[in-house]
Each structure stands twice: as C-alpha cells, then as structure tokens.
Image (cartoon, rainbow, N blue to C red; front, top):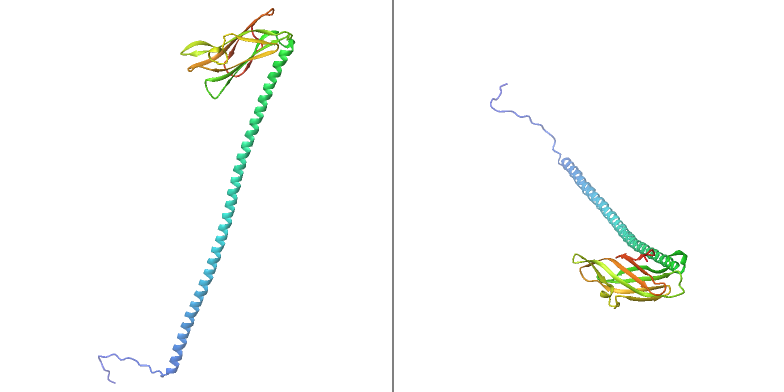
Length: 252
C-alpha cells in the first residue's frame, strides 16, 4: 500500500451526540458551583454576625470593666482625700493637745515658782530674813524695742512691820561699741525718779514699760534697794537680760 508523504495523519474518535446528557451534566456542575457559592455566602454572613456579636459583647464587657474601675478609682480618691483630711485633723488636734499640755505645764511650773516664792516669804526658816530682791522679769512686745519689766521686792522673816525705802534700776548694755548704763526713768514714761519709793509688808512689784534706744544691745539689769529705819539694809543684784529669773541669795 502506497503512503502519502508530506502530511501528518490525525486519529479521529467518533462519539455519540447526546445534547440532553451534556445539558444535565452542565446543569449539575452549575448547581454545585451555585450551592458552594451560597454556602460560602451564608457561612461568611454567619461568621460575620458571630464576630460582630462577640465584638459587641467584648465592647460591653470593656465598658462595664471601665465603669467599674472608674468607680473604684473615685472611691479610692475619696478614701485618700478622707484619710488626708483626717490626718490633717489628727495632726491639728495633736498639735492643739500638745500645745495645751505645754501651756498647762508652763502654768504648773509658774504656780510652783509662786508657791515656793510665797513659802519663802511667809516661812522665815526657809530663807534669809530681811529685804530681798526676789525676782525680775522682762517680757517682749510686738515692738522689738518695747518691753515690760517687773521687779519683785520681798521681806522674808518678821512680817509684822512694814519695810520701806528706795530702789534704783539701770539697764546695762552696749551702744556704739561702748558699755553704757541707762537709768530706768530714762526709758520708761511711768517712772519719773531715779529712786523708786517702796513700802510693803510681804512683797511689792515695781512695774514699768520700757522703750530701749535704737542700736542698744541690753545685757544686764542692775537693781539696788535701800531700806530705812531701825532695820535698814542695802541689797543689790545683777540680772541677765532675758527670761524671768528668781534669785533669793543676794548680797546685803
């Protein structure tokens, strides 16, 4: 058998022509695709709803947690403010109590000093008899140059008769680099004489409000007292400038 050269021979397959079967096959494939697409759509929609619900629930939970923590923070701030206020009140109360106790102790000490003083005056056996410069106090005022001075003269021992005489007071200090002594009458409007008259049975206070010169630094107060009569005596004493001093041992 002779072959034809120069061309390729292809094999042909003969299949039966079935249009209905092909249509059904295509319809089935389309249905499967459509069902898959629908299932995907509904699954996605369901998943979206579920995620949205979970997100909403999480947001609500976070909001509740935020409100709860906000409330706890406000309560904590209120407690802190209350404690701080209470601490301030307690501190103020403690300070007031401490100051009251201090004042009471000062009053007790002052009363004890006065009791000792009056015992010394009324009980001859406890002190040296006769004229005594018992006490001097200098108290400051709002004016740095103004002071209140008090000098107590006592008679210890036989108080049946009056003691009378004169007292002199000088304030010793430094002014302009020099030591100076200023008479009490020169710095007090209430004292007009160098010699201050006294007359008493038990005790007498010499009180004066003084105004010191500027640039004057006080250091001491010199007090001298001279009684007259059959039991005349002279006593003198130097007191340091400052708080009250009680002195019973004085020269005569």
